[in-house]
Image (cartoon, rainbow, N blue to C red; front, side, top):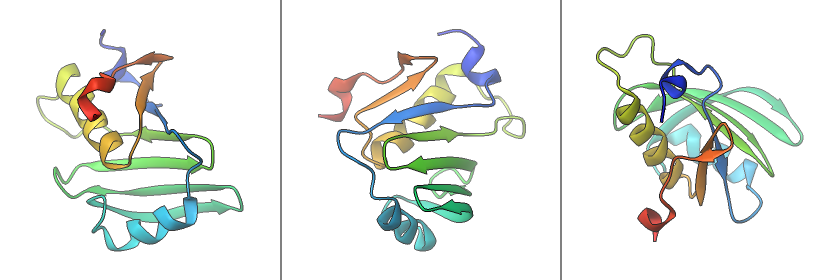
Length: 118
């Protein structure tokens, strides 16, 4: 992996086996309990929601865009001291796994070993 992930403003794409239940996730995010993500909905359309919040494990900012057939996750790194490419990749994989993603893609390439989530 190159420095591209740490410099990316886009983040990663989360791949799910089934359609995403946007409404259910929105309810879970409001209390932060199930996924340990405390998120506030900042934009909403019938088939899309955008969230901003905090990963309650690391207390880092997290941005999440959700639709029924895709999700994009980004973690701003400019305020995280000593951030490395490996650490950021692990953070993305950890959050993706908590959300039930079966794969996590950056620039179309997997950064997740699928065997890790079985």
